[in-house]
Image 1 (cartoon, rainbow, N blue to C red):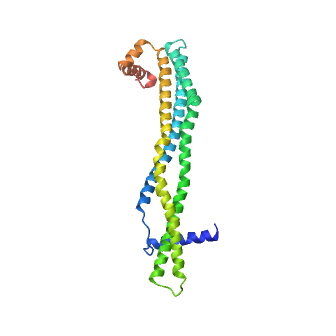
Image 2 (image 1 turned 180 degrees about the vertical axis):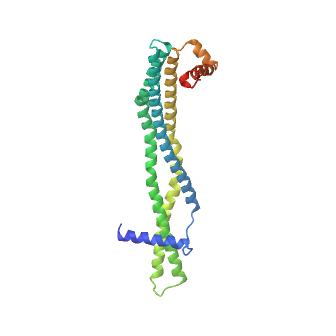
Length: 264
């Protein structure tokens, strides 16, 4: 930082302290404060959306990977008992279906998800540091303006014998006011425009997410439906009638009766 920059920072810090003690009047711009508040909410929502979108994609990968490991174990259970049984064939079909789904996620969903959802979110969030820099610059110029206004008032209230002091203070005041008002007006005008663009900007991403979820659900249903044909009709009927719980409880009871499971 240059000496001039350091001096300005020091002066602004002093102005802030004097404002807190009531020695320099602080400009209150409610219109800007309202627009900044809405912008900050939007910034926070976008950052959360980017984080949650990444978590969603990671969770989808984790789910299909876990499902693949589950299917492999199930196939091992049934294959060890009787490789020719309906259960073994269903276990093998389930494993194949899950592997196809897991591969499909990587081939067909990962790249489109990054392109249509993660990248637009990343680009939107990349704008916030730029906007924040403009807001920070505006706030610094506001401190300069408040300090110049206070200085001008003091010169007017206590005239100096130096005839150059008043014109100089007036010029500093006018220059500081002009710079501040230019930055302030720009933000008050453009912050609402930025927020108005959020819906048309995110519309394609939202539609893409719905389409990808539908595709994943449809493919999952299609592949799992194919696995069902390996089960006997009676199993599907019992499931529809809610009778499988009773069958499971019956098997559990048989297990409890085994000595190694705690039976006396």
